[in-house]
Amino acid sequence: MKHYLARIFALASLALFLFSSPSWAADEFPGRAKYPDVPVMSKHELKDKYKDVVIVDTRSKLEYETLRINGSKNIPVASKTFADQLKALRSKTDKTIVFYCNGRTCMKSYRAVKQAKRARVENTIAYDAGMFEWAKTYPEMASLFGQSPIQPNEIISKNEFKARSLEPNAFMDKVHQSGSKSLVLDIRDKYQRGAAGFFPGKERWASLDDRKKLDQYIEQAKRENRPLFIYDEVGKQVRWLQYALEKNNVKNYYFMDAGAKGYYKQMMKDFGIR
Image 1 (tube, rainbow, N blue to C red):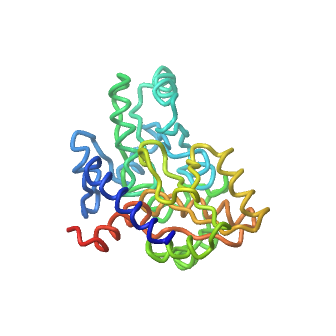
Image 2 (image 1 turned 60 degrees about the horizontal axis):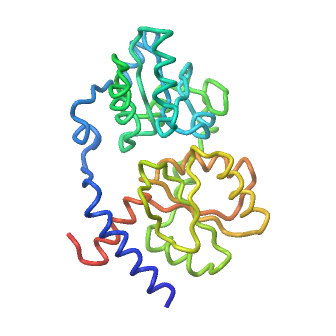
Image 3 (image 1 turned 45 degrees about the vertical axis):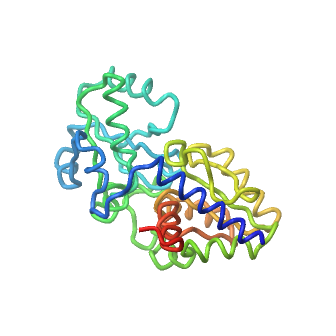
C-alpha cells in the first residue's frame, strides 16, 4: 500500500514537473539551447587563456574542496551573496570571468552568467564542458583534496561509482524495502529542487551548499546504521559526494542513476506519457 501511494505521489510530482519545468534536450550541451544568449568557451580555449582570465567555480563548497580547477575561486551560484561576491571580485580585476560547474548537463555556469548580467557585472563567460572533462584532459591543472597534479588511481572509477547507482525504479524499491530505517537525501540546490521531493516522510533536503546539514545527516545515518539513498538533478553531483562518503567510512549508501531527471523520465515511461 505504501509503495502504491509512493507511485501516486510520483505521478503528482511528474505532473507538476511537466507543467512547471522546461523540457531538456538530448543534445551534447543542452544548456546552450536553453541559454542561447550566454557566451561559452571550450576547455582548450580556457587552457590557452588560463593566465588571462579569472576562473570561478559555481558549485558547492564540498564539490570545490573535493575537485577543482587550479587557481579557481569558489562562489556558489546558489548562494544568497553570489551577486555581492561577484561585484567584489569585479572591483579587483577587469579580466574576463569564466564560470564552470560539473559537466555538460550542469546549468550552473549558464545561470552564473545570467545572474552576473543582472548584477551588471560584464565580461563573463561559461566554460560548460565542466570539471570532470577538465580533470581528465589536464590533470596537472586540477586538484583533488588540494593535491595537484591528480593521479589516475586517486579518481573514483566509473565502475566504483556505478556499483552504488540504482535505476530509478530499483532505487525506489530499495527505499521502501528498507522501511523506516531508510534515509533519503535530496541534495539538489534551490534552483534545481523547486518545491517538492519524491519520498514524503522518508526524505530530507540537504543541498550540497549546506555542508553542515549534509554532514549531520551523513553522520546520523552512519551512527544509526541506516542505509542512505541520495539523489541529485542529473546523477553527476553525487559522484563528488562519494569521495566524502568514502573518506568518512560510510558503507551503506546508494545513488539514483541519472538523478531527478532520470526519475521523471522513468515515470513518464511507466505511466505511458510520451
